[in-house]
Amino acid sequence: MILVKSTWNEKQTFRTVPVSNDCPYVECIWDPEQKVFVVISRVTKTTLHMLPRLDDNGDPVILNNGKKRANGRFLKEERKSIETFQEYYVEDKDAMMYIINSMCVNAKDFNLKEFTEA
Image (cartoon, rainbow, N blue to C red; front, side, top):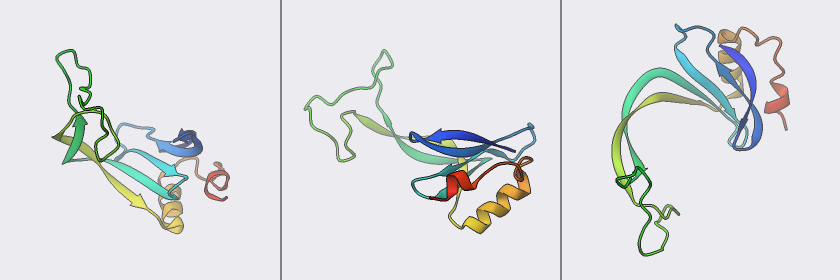
């Protein structure tokens, strides 16, 4: 993996990207608001997600009553079973640094403090 500067929810952050096809991770990203390091592996799992219901043209179907649903959306939704990558949430900063130093080729040269310290 290699560390790169990035944006998450309109805030500057860092993420990792694989440098070879045999890497066991898709990516990792630091969420600056939640102060959590998200590790996304290539292992997949089946999970249920609420997805917008689509019309015959592939457009999301809007509710007819004009009211928001409990989740704040104006769209009809349906629960679907989909394959997703397994995610791990690392909240401990020492554990995050151990992971980064273990798998990132540019860990010593990348300024993580720019993103992890207020």
